[in-house]
Image 1 (cartoon, rainbow, N blue to C red):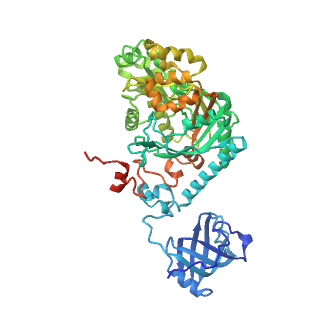
Image 2: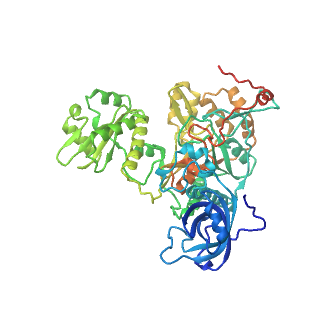
Image 3: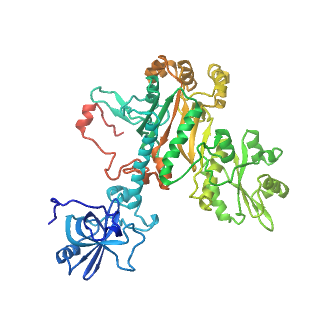
Length: 604
């Protein structure tokens, strides 16, 4: 029969007792993490969210408690009463904060029993954990692991730090609605049917973008919010259908003022892990980031910058290279120091890797101590091979890895390969933190499938002042529409250790420019009004210049916790296939609910 607490109260957590507490009578409560029987003595590691304390029960001093201890199993919930005593010489446990003491138990209450868990909670090393799907199905057990407990607590501290920063700087926290109007642009909306308005639908917010801009029109001047967001995106391992972001907006500001707040907030939060970043972060334009690193979120903890070899091959008669260059493509490389010993198998693996990013092949040059070898030796000849290696700044012992193709493919393939090699070769100093602000993003991207331009960020981003006339020309003159690809935006990202932690922009605050932007995106005036009429109306009532940014809470916490798995910093995440294995959702609903909503499921 299970016990009840009655009037007993916990006096201490399982993580706070020290040698100075010796002699105290205490009451601890928690879960049985481990149990070890030694005849007369039974030792139990008792765990709660604060840590672990070893308790010891003696058949001589507490026969009833000892008899009860014999029946305990892992994850039983118990309360113990006893005296804090120093551990015997030679039995101290330096791995535990409470390792200098133990509690000599006089009484045990069994508050609840537990089934045998479907996986072992106490394991050493992530490689020994149960499968992620199993752990997600029993998330309430997985969350008892100290590492996940620490991650979730770190997340709470990070959000508190964010609020502290903005509260102290005069920002107002304003909650915006979850049930909104669907304005499809970019990712798909999650839609919610209305029972009262049959046939009508709400949409869950992909971000509070329009509403936070409306708070600026409303005159609040400085806004922030810890916002839940929802995006019905195609499956990706590092994305979740629902997530949390810090959202902020300011009126009467330029980009530099927003940069200062973005840097200041992250610097404030990173103090949680004793990381000091410079007050002003380095800057890099989008063009420069793509040219040097093949990525708009470069990891600056290691080098291996992209080397442009196009100029060395302008006169080549090798048809595949000549064709690429004549079509405004590129030939670029990265140099892997000291890896002229890459085997054919390793090079084949790297070739398969770049093919995932659209590259047709991976060419290579290896500068051995005795000879230079290359996959291009027969078609280019040894003199040209050595010229290319020299242009890439390679030295003896190095490997040069080359990708040829459209600029976008070369950047994507080499940028990803750079990161992959750094991971494989252990080139990243995990104790370093390198931050960067990437500026002047393109305002538009060309969608090759639809042959139209789409917003690179969102349709409310302002063009650079220097590109405003170019923007107007490209929109108003159909023959110059291709110039949209040259228009830069007042858009920026904050990058830490290769993660895009935040992104933002100065917004369009004049209706005529917003109308032009919708036109550039292929929206007719009627379509724009149907989707965004309320916002276009608001712009006509004295909208101040404004801008801001949004920062992913999960991405920020991944950096704080040193994990590359987004699910490690969320209490109840979905799988990569957007399922909740614990709650078994999404699931079916009753026919009555569907009838009330006027919805019929088609199984065709």
